[in-house]
Image (cartoon, rainbow, N blue to C red; front, side):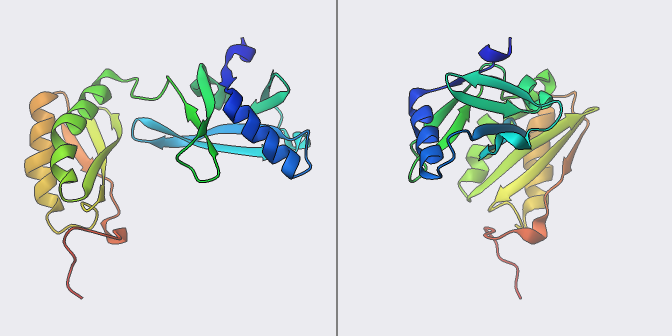
Amino acid sequence: MIDTLLTVTPAAREKIDGVRSFNDFADAVLRVRVAGREGPRFLYEIALEDPRERADGDLAVDLDGITVVMDPRSAADLSGATIDLDPAVTGGGLRIDNPNEGWRDPLARRVQEVLDRQINPGVGSHGGMVTLVDVKDGTAYMRFGGGCQGCAAVDVTLKQGVETAVRGAVPEIGAIVDVTDHQAGENPYYQHGH
């Protein structure tokens, strides 16, 4: 049932009502969309919009005076989620607590566990991180970030660290592909000479 799809906390409701009132737009609807993934986590878009902007096929649910609108694909990923106030955002922003985040694929879950327990604590000491982007057909696709992005030692980290640890723990992984744009690194641990 769509009206049990989402929950809006009282704190989030107060923030939404305050923004609608401040903008003199009392009938604004809340658009929520799963825009993609960053590793095991969803990336969300949350915005107030004119109710006339609804697209054909959009799903809408009235949650005690707030209409929440989403596309059908996002609805499947948002089932059981809670929209809450994020106290970490100055002025208060909204966040989504979603039980559907994480990897559904058991192989991806096992690779993620290796990254969380073995890899990221080590590369984190250099300001780096490794994110699992996807697992398909026995290949794990990973992105290196922070100090690992643009680092001269990333090939060593990948070949001797990440590949060894992942293949040792998850032998079903036949290949690991680095999908990082290393040229875009803003703060690599090792800076290339100019």
